[in-house]
Length: 468
Image (cartoon, rainbow, N blue to C red; front, side, top):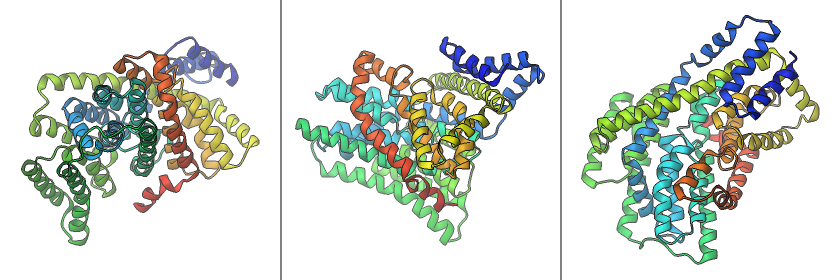
């Protein structure tokens, strides 16, 4: 069987409706059996080795942390905090939607969790305040793409494993682009508010706004204080963080903060990784411990029955993700053995050696693939093909990882396989056609963000370089 026949077999299985993991593993097994170049058991061996990875342990723990936060009533606290902070602006609930997604992105790591969790609350609230279903769904879909860009991020973990880059560097790389995306979306909300003459959705109350700003200040000061005490004062890291957290918990009880502790999740995670206290995998476990502490002991919104359900949901999601990763491992190996990646690389480089032109073509390819494949599957297929070209052209793999994930998040908003599209259509009780049309105007800020991230690498790479 020739390499071309191998690729046609894979595409044929995909086109016939076979799940992507089965298509990858099945085409690889058939190729091995027909050619007889290696023993059949190599397929299983490669699949097992593909998931026998320490960094991949972060996957189930990040999924568990997001599910715990979603089930512990944290979404209501985030929504109320965002409402107090920006609900009084023109087009208030649109801004609340985006700010809430920025905060929730720092806990869930996936666009689906954001859309299903906060989306349910936000769409209902916007409808109750007289916003059209189309606007409500559009802004919710666009803001859901922030989930995997602002750390922690499940797609970043998968990309890091296949591209052999630092998960921490990818997490840091996503912070500034996530802020840029949020500002562009809020600018879009302001445009619609001005066009339709919308007002705010809550009264401006100085006390509420000042309290919300004080909560943000507390979160911002926490890492500054800890860094000063440990690096300038010479105090040990872990005891200092423990004391600082104890003080923070006491302040939460005294001042009745609504969202400080949930917002602290990404701060603790990124701070711990950049300070070298734990790796990304250990950070995922720390995020789970923090989520359990908040849900069971502090807010007391999680019970054992809910915990069992959350655990089962996590097992189900993890199983799907790891099956795709295992199948992609043998598929990527077969692409290498059959010299497919080498031939694709040579063809692309014969067409263009200009990094800018390559990034344009790669964006078009990834946007197209993202419409048909779930992000994990798309990453596992595209990284072995595109990364050798990326390295040959001198493009930073961390920068390219952010470009790839952002492209695939935009693909989640499109038929025929856009999962966020289907989730929000069900939540808003709209047809797929109406939901698709509602999302179209919001592609503009997303594509502008993609262009900025693609052709201004410093947006992604400035923070990682500061912590090298």
